Image 1 (cartoon, rainbow over the protein chains, first blue to last red):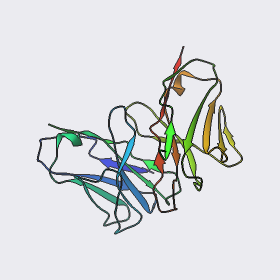
Image 2: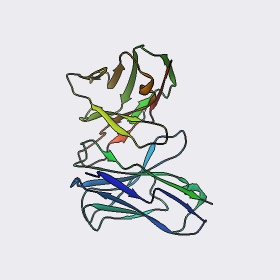
Image 3: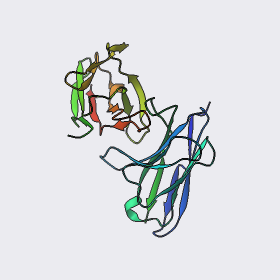
Length: 112
Length: 111
């Protein structure tokens, strides 16, 4: 049972490039989330989804887009990467909004 | 008032000590409470849920005080391996609203 899997684990981009981070969960969870975490700071919610085909903005959505075409996958896109988006990105999933979230092991993204 | 507030620490304690963290929350209607643990450069992991009557898991005890709107985590007989950041997590509003994570309290257990 893999739980929550994030790909890639590491990536270096140049300013202005685009990329997509993939999150996959095999727990049949309805809710999925994308967070970013910067050094010495807490988790900040970027976008989330309460079910297949739905997305909603979190605390820091600007510069990111998401899609949830399949229940098990939640994609995070950066259309034009900026150095301020250098961070560790965590994906999580849960059965519902009040249930505990299960996290992937993160994607370390550097934008030069 | 922030939705979830924690003392960032660090708390530096010797092995074998007992240490406690508190976390305050702003919405009196909150129903779900959790403690997570996050090791350096790793993902957060669920440590334990917090129930109204309080609950214990080995050396860890979690309690909820609704009147004062805080939850607590007590760690007895601290081990070196307990060194980590402990995140307080609360559901602030309705069931469809994501949980809110505190910024964490850092614990260092020293030999």
